[in-house]
Every structure is written in C-alpha cells, then in structure tokens.
Length: 154
Image 1: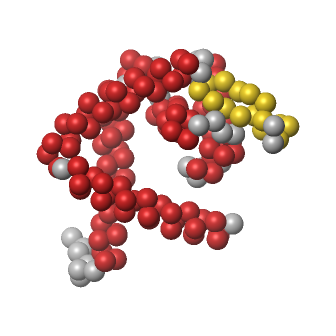
Image 2 (image 1 turned 180 degrees about the horizontal axis):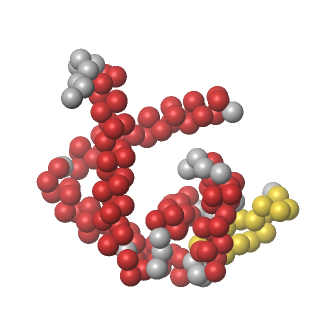
C-alpha cells in the first residue's frame, strides 16, 4: 500500500480520498432512509440547495455544484411536476426563471432534515462534534480554493 511521507499535502490527500468514501456510504444510507419520500438523490440535492440558499435560476444552481444547466434542468422540471418547486418570473432575465420551494417542498425538506438529524445525532456521540466542526471548516476552505481554480480555468 502506498503511504507517502508525513506532510500537510499527505493530510490533504487523505481528506480528499475520504470524501468519495463518505459520499457513497451516505448515499447508501440515504436510499433506505428516504425511500418512502418519493425523491431521488439528485432531487434531494436540489431541494436542499433551494432550502438553504433560497430561490435561484437553473444556471445559478448549476454553478454552485458545478455541473451543467442541462443536467439540473430535468431535475427541476421533475420537482415542479411533483409540486415541490415552483417557477416565478425573473426580473433580471426574461428567459431564465427563478425556482423556489413550494410549501410542500419546504415540508419535504423539513422531513428530510429531521430524518438526517436523527442519524447525525448517533454519529456525533462516537466521534465528537469538534471533529466535525474542524472537518467542515477544512472542507469549506478547500472548496473555496477549488472554486478559485475553476474560475481561473474558465
């Protein structure tokens, strides 16, 4: 097994390597945790984005992820069809609609979050909340730097 010499770079690389591991494990748990709610992983991500960040256009949401608008649009259309999201005219742009949560969408987000928090409470007991706070801070800083790199590449 490859194990580079101790360094800050090794620690960053180890963190980066753990992200997909955690993502796929969380995805597996989420599938069973939310199976009865009728929203898939991509839909949950969009709902969460609108719940936390507020109304946005499809291009705005795509930039936050970062993915293409074309990959976000069908998910938004499905959420509109399910009654969780609505469109409103965008005063800043004639063609790009603003998307926001309906009351049913807010209710669904609260239910998603309530279930997630129950699982999170179990994890905190074993690991410790300070460890999660430090990990979140490090990931925010890394994401900020990655956003800068993406912006420079465009």
